[in-house]
Length: 109
Length: 276
Image (cartoon, rainbow over all chains, first blue to last red; front, side, top):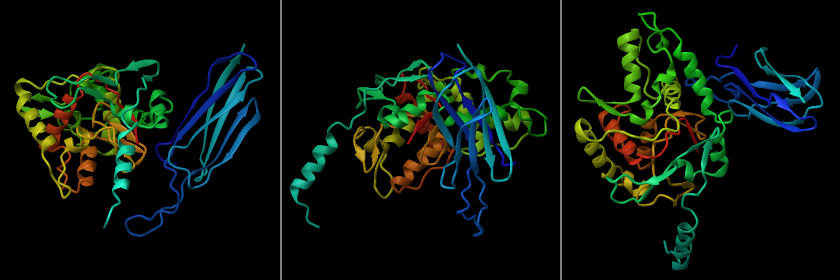
């Protein structure tokens, strides 16, 4: 597991039905591009988050492919209209096979 | 090389107009911070002091207003982890002696300060605790662990006004810092004051010159995507004027830190701030 990886998400807890809400996500990750060399001239192997998804009550909301040029600690912000109360599930996929997950509940009134 | 005089004139008039600090108000998580204040009485050549935040682009400014978007908070989280991490021969962590990091509220605003005839900074205090109480290796001055910890501790003072002591024991250090501030060094033969006192608000190539306030330190810089220490920033400044930088943690930089802190008396501590 890459070190120092910590996902974080900001989702409003309560919204009115039909409101557009802003969801902010960030994962601390070094996003090593695979293009750099170390002091001895050896290539530092690529190690990035290559995919990010968000699901709401099991239904996919967004699915993002990340490329090596994306800088450290990738941040995603997007808007969503939430039809009903439920859970947002956020998933980040690491090159090394690790999967980081975070879930946030939201209440629609 | 021959310059057409009108080119120089045009460049100067553009350089002089509408480039001073903006008038935006800084609200961090709903709390209003002071980014403009009357200069302390010891400053002879400046009437009003401005936080470096006021010189940044609106995109950079926005990052600092929300703790979720402030990239420095990632490092504060690292500091939280380090706070309870046991290290050294005594089997202790910071939290073994200091119950709550919140107890350090106000510390950032008062540092550096004189203790037993020596000027000490936050880095000194942290390393003293590590060596004397934890039996651990001191951290590197601008290393990742140190800046994470100084960010965490400084955050506790956010919103408080900078208030360093410059009289009594501190006076000789302050005088030394002032002398350094006004001394020209390096191949470009420049002093701190040439940029940050005589020319703040204008552009130095692509960079908007601020007053060089340190109330936002330790600060996250977009250019290197990490937390920068005060002394690390001094070093960068000195390299830019092609001088040989003093040592991080050395007497010169500590004295300069005290003098600069005193030039920001009355501004809010913004640590950890976001700059370009």
